[in-house]
Image 1 (cartoon, rainbow, N blue to C red):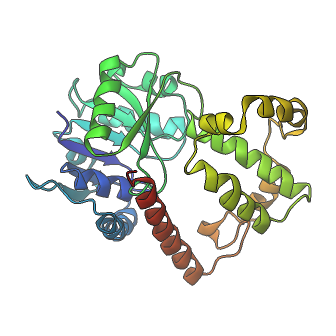
Image 2: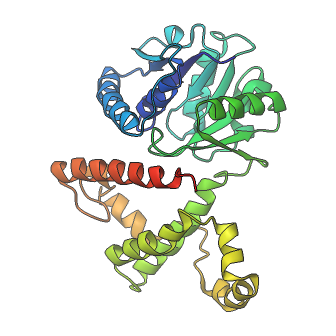
Length: 309
């Protein structure tokens, strides 16, 4: 049974993951090498905990979990039943983490990666006991979005996938098992197909960024929150899909590189919220406002989706 969890890396996702796991009654140790990252994570943890409180997610009566922070990786993984790697999307960086923890954990400890899309088979090649290695891809913000992808690599034991799926279910969250270890898994493959098309439309001057956001959020996004894409096919009619696809598919963006518009913005240092400007400009006050509004609206939508008929 998984009771103690170590999270390696306190980036954007780490604090929210830690908060949600602790609310499930689990003992969580959060690690990062950088003191500034740990300090920032502690502040983010309190924000995530207040959001979980607003969702009515409370710790089990039998005993609540807790989050402890450390900059000592050996201390972080000591006694852990599950280690979740949450470092940048770089195989070399991740491989170094696996080498560091390899001799610090037992052969029965599950090691999971929160990678957004690096194939699990490639990652598990860098660790002993690859049968105990699995993908556990959370969606941002992880303390609000309940869906988590579970991905086994070529050497992952079925029991490892089952254990992580059972853990996710025990937390009241929604595990989605990806049956084949494809790059990007499922969520990001669908998301990036959409992003490729919207960037292409903006770059070609078909629509302004503000209007494409309105179109997606209040059009297809509004529907897809309630009706999944496969169910949407049935709702529209497969004959209609076949008819429209027969001419539209040939005109959709299918480029294999990244749109020049994105490269130009990166070269200019305009990376998005983190740099104060990206597609849109952001002041510090605007960033705080966006984060508050995002959390408030996601909480409201989740409450509605969880309503029973």
